[in-house]
Amino acid sequence: MISLSYIGKKNKEQILQNHTNYSFSKKWNTENNLLISGDNYSAMQMLLRDYDLKGKIDLIYIDPPFATKNVFTAGEDRVSTISSKQSDTVAYSDVLVGEAFLEFLRERLLMAYELLSEKGSIYVHIDYKIGHYVKVLMDEIFGIENFKNDITRIKCNPKNFSRKAYGNIKDLILFYGKSKNTIWNDPREIFTEEDIKKLYKKIDEHGRFYTTIPLHAPGETKNGVTGGTFKGLKPPPGRHWRSDPKELEKLDEDGLIEWSLNGVPRKIIYADEQKGKKVQDIWDFKDYQYPRYPTEKNSGVLERIIQTSSNPDSIVLDFFCGSGTTLVAAQEFGRQWIGIDKSEKAIEITMQKLARVENKLFNQLDFDSLEIIDKMSRTG
Image (cartoon, rainbow, N blue to C red; front, side, top):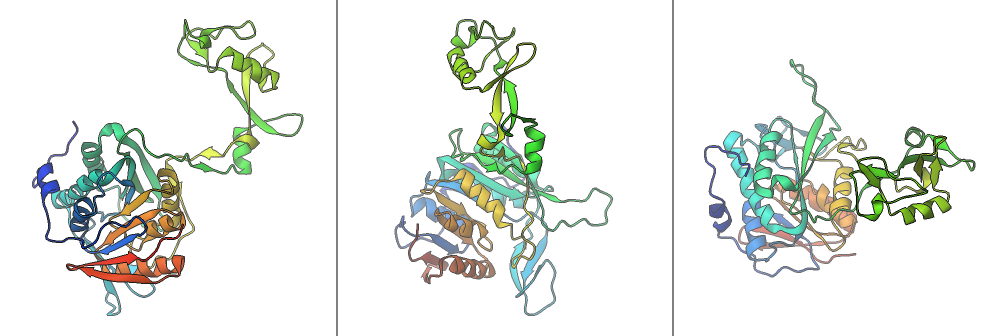
């Protein structure tokens, strides 16, 4: 098993069995969403223990601190890492570094694993300085076999300082599943005219753009039907037909096979029949420029993640919810959500953003020094 060794690393069982003095005074209501103001370590323990949510969360997205040694402030109309204005308030502190930061994150990732359902996924948004260590932590916790992508997210406002290195314009998002059977709503991007001209270079007599692909694939099949004969042809040595020859006959009858001058058949793929091009692992969203909260992420990132890795009956969790971008996206797509943050400024901005989405009142409840803001009703 892959694991990361460092000073101060606790035993897994010690972390999971540790209990805080906090508790919820009511049961989980499947009609409500939860916005929790307080320490996420304690809150996640309560989600596991008091709300019995072990194995019930389908999607987790977090944008945790990046071990930057910065204190982030938020004024009425600006965000920064350094401020002398009295009107600015501390949004959050990112002062843990090295082994202390890794263990801080590992404790929470272990509980995240317990909360995830077998069809669940987790996306961890991190930067290039610490991300490779976090990758090893996640290999240890979620299993390297469940690693799916290292997604490059192009920053909206890159900070290219005058140092002897290439400019940095990217963050990374580490994407893991709880198992191989994760929710996947195959995301696609609409073809542009340029895409069509590049990918579908042929035009038929009706003006439709198309391309062709081989009818065979690597791997020889000696006894199966895909090793049989189609129009008197056998698949090339070391290959097999992609479909039963009977299905190929039907394609040919429907005019969906193109024959070369040398008598080589290829399947016709029309551009206007495709859902779009497959989303790749480099994401560039540029429609967001003026965040009200430090490190606030583009809503398009969260909308894509929620649409791809959750279903309408899913619960979405963000335990570093910041200004609530994840929660707003989850609400807009009809998912149930849970958000946790200990920053009063984060909770304030989140409530404002959610109120704009729902235009409803929130009921604020106080349980044992944890401030719970529990949405009164959920609309589908």
